[in-house]
Length: 106
Image (tube, rainbow, N blue to C red):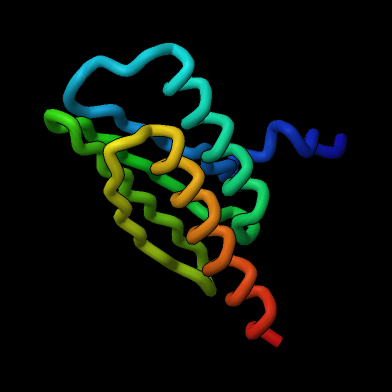
C-alpha cells in the first residue's frame, strides 16, 4: 500500500510567524499584516521560513522580517510612524531583495 503524500511525516511545511508587540493593534492592521506576509511568502524560495515582528513604541512602529531557506536569507528592519506606509515599504523592499536573488541565482 502506497503512503499518502499528505501523511508523509518527513515533509515539513513551514508557515509564517507573526509577533505583535507593544500597543494594541486594530483588526485592520492585523489583517493587512497577514496579507503582506502571505504575499511575501508566495515570493519566497520553496520551504523558506519567514518570521515578522511588528512593534509599536509610542508613535514609532518597527517591522523586522527574517526569511531563510537553503540558498537565501535576509533580515530587514524598517521603522515608520504610519502603519500603512510601514507595510508598503516592507513589502517593496523585501520583494526587491527576493527578485534580485532570483535574477542572480543562475
